[in-house]
Image 1: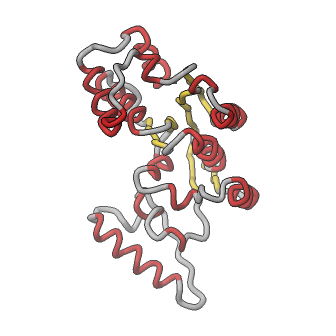
Image 2: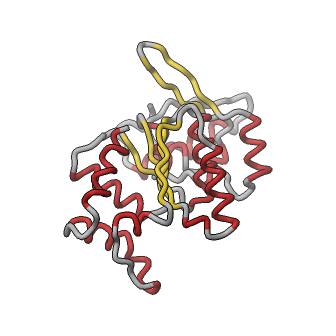
Length: 231
């Protein structure tokens, strides 16, 4: 674990030096790490990424298959998982389980509940960017043996795109999927959130937290998430 005790800036310098070594003739660099930064920065240089999981004294290795990577290029050319997995999202490789959500408001909502209710500490919330990315993250979790739950809005199946994305999430259910929690319309409607104006949408994550803290959201529905988070 070469990044141990290193400041972020030093991690970056270390990675640059490792890349230089790997480019010399006849050289190969193998790194064991717990740093999300080392598998996100300049990761076009990564030729293989493996995740090792130890359970009951048995260690299992998970890696992305060639078929998965090829299918991703064909079916989701804009979803280069290496580029999408920034240091924040790369934390998913180092925890027991993750919860995949659509965006910042969902992530803020669940993180607040985890902290305030002292829930599962080794659960990480992954902001997937939007609903259409969730199936790809689910398949990525499957490849790397990452236990995951999903929370998303069905948006009333209002358009063909929503119907397609909703079905894709359901179809991506795999052996590492723990739970899928969906809402007929959206999370905000379900928990009784007073929507912000379109011009203030950037404030929505903060407003969700404020209304949650002030007890303005549905206590019955909010309580359901404790069970969801602890599954």
